[in-house]
Image 1: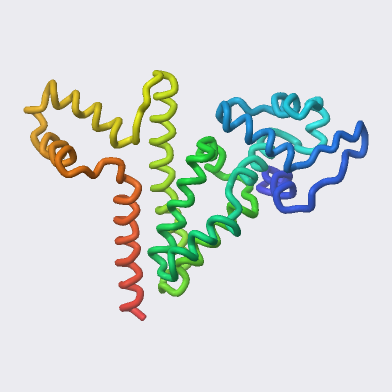
Image 2: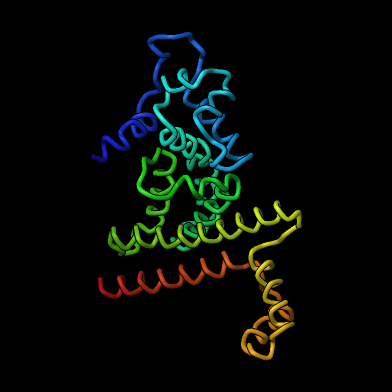
Length: 255
């Protein structure tokens, strides 16, 4: 069943590029060019703006001509996600090398590079969820994160769960930023980070009903006095890494 559902996308992502269609005019289409057209549309309009018809129009071919290369939208989106995800052998590997050899530093650098990828292409948040075909670049990102935890004494399942936990935190921050950006675009406001936006809303609540929420008032007063807004990524990431560190220490004690 899985092969029937994702087999075409897997073959497009991992197999050799297909040659020209057996019939019809030679348009010189490539999977790279098709994916690039889809990425450009998604970057400008979001994933909802992408369709086989729209991509075909961008490439100046008919939709039927496009179908000779890509069987459907699911496969198109898989190719787009692979094209938009940064090649881990380029920037990611360099960032990990700069981070040093420690698992904590390397996993932290991995998380920040992942957030940069989501910021560059916010639609990737929708395109990279659920059961689906994944390409070499996305698997390469997973490989690097797991490699950072090698030698820590964690089981394979624990390492996988640790990476999922870090990635989930990054996705949550990226989703908040995407929502704030979308709202600012609609309302014409300059906007700010998620923490700034939330702080503005809570500030109005405190102005109206501050006496009902003394703990919240004290926390907001501390933020205003000492700073600390827009640090949700680092704060959450450090606490997650703290927790993984406790598990690593426990596994070392058991050895």
